[in-house]
Length: 94
Image (cartoon, rainbow, N blue to C red):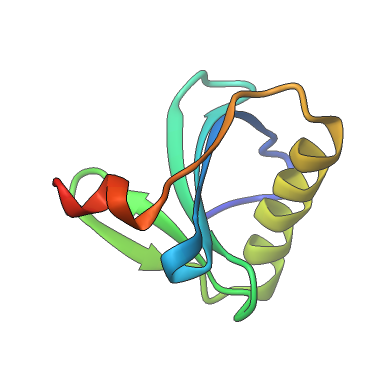
């Protein structure tokens, strides 16, 4: 569960154009824990990596989604973090 008190510092972003999403590595401001998100641009879906279960879970709560999307949009506007774009050729070798 993500709360309004949690602030995420976006550390890295990788745009994945083939699936219209951005992979985001963040750090919780108060705990220093790393959180990973997939932010889908057109569908407005957001997924968070659940490290214990080893899967991606969609944030179904609108408030949680909005908190992550707001942080993401602010990070994009500030342009202070490393950002990359993965081409489809980059992923073919995986």
